[in-house]
Length: 151
Length: 65
View 1 (cartoon, chains in turn blue, yellow):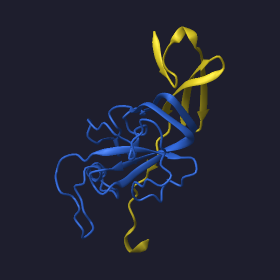
View 2 (cartoon, chains in turn purple, green; view 1 turned 30 degrees about the vertical axis):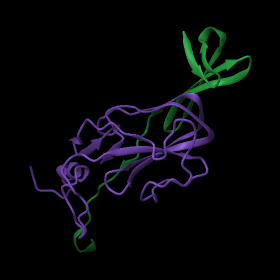
View 3 (tube, one colour; view 1 turned 180 degrees about the vertical axis):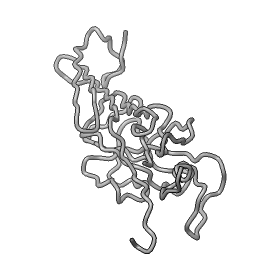
């Protein structure tokens, strides 16, 4: 096996576990897993790649929905397969018995432990919920299909 | 069997139920709508995320080559 140029796969997994800090501002206060939350946004919002942190602007509101959204179940640590590091929430994200009458289309997953910094947004198309349950079923936790892939 | 609605718990037999399936490029959505005499009294939505956002971590070249 010859030498090669590559981003080390272990580094990709390490990124998902905060092993490295290339900056000068250390913001981490502990070694445990952070708490991640999932907030919903109206179709009139502009959540996306440029979103740096959770904001209540354009967040949905309605019966049984709390600002900031719900916690994300994180029982499975990041891992890798081949050269892809990946992570997926270990359970569906569920908003129970909510009424969200104004059309919304996006969920923002963010780090509520670390200054609400954003992780990813996912636009699933415009929808509403009436006295019902919104269930966001996660993709299979595998390389290429996981919610976060560092390929 | 009773289900919760905007009018409180109601017998499921009194309601008509319609499932609306929508598939777009990255999502499959199933909306289950419950109607009482034509009025929407409950709507559940199940979203399946089909295509995750990918992040490509690529190495750079030395000397800008």
